[in-house]
Image (cartoon, rainbow, N blue to C red; front, side, top):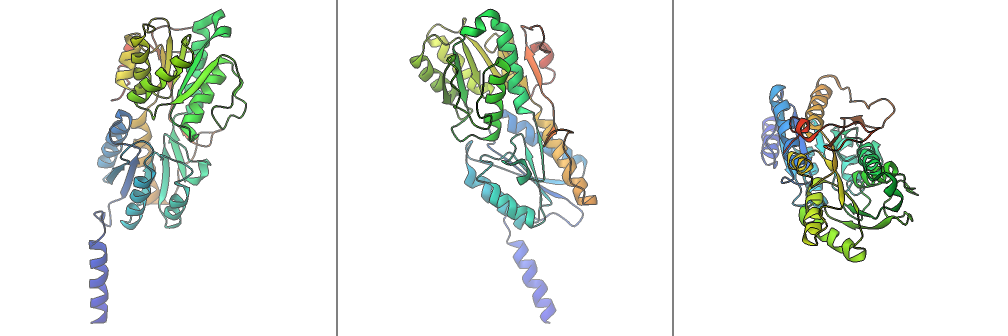
Length: 340
């Protein structure tokens, strides 16, 4: 009788959990993105679900209410651990703030894989599937320098970052761009410590079009002679373009970015963005699902690309104005690979 009561109590406890339990044969995988509105994360979710369906696994998806909503991501991790998830795929909104809850998840036996945004340090997670964000920034920096040619020495550069929190992906893209352009980055692990006179200033966008417009307006007020704009992503680039257009500067300022979303590739074709570095979010998510399923079967954790602390999912420069020495693809060709 006691055994029966104990079994009944355990069954009731699990029935009360906030997530549906996976069956004994089914692998439960959590996907936690920064938001559920950014096309990048929408495509990531599509990739995870398609691969999970093919492998008879189950994906439960969560997202922050906004980019930077760490509390929602913490709650999602805790819910997934309680639900018995085998693995969690996450694009961390704040890689440092999330480290303690990720440790608790791993201590509970959950495989944690970072997607797109590495933790700080990277080994907070079991593995990372991501773009080489430094390389993505470096490619657009090299392109911009070659495009300006002899005028690069007198460039007036506006840097439109994600936030002031020195998030890994934000820093890598910014520092990669400056390195590619030939600017000393001082401490490569933080933004905004450079003293090169060509830099007009930095402002933050939260990765949104509205944020890009506002940041561009602020930097134009600081120095109306801006002629090169780096942006953390393509929505911010679109906002920067609108601010430049409002003052009649849209045709004499070069904008470079990172993402490779279909709207961004269209903006390359339209001349809004000079060049962008394309990422592959669907690939990140599908590889992450494969890795969790393999871990469930064999206990083997995924590795990294040789020479790197993460698995590199690739990056490709998209531009309709190719320059010597920088490999690139046209916007027309990019349309067959873009997302969103």
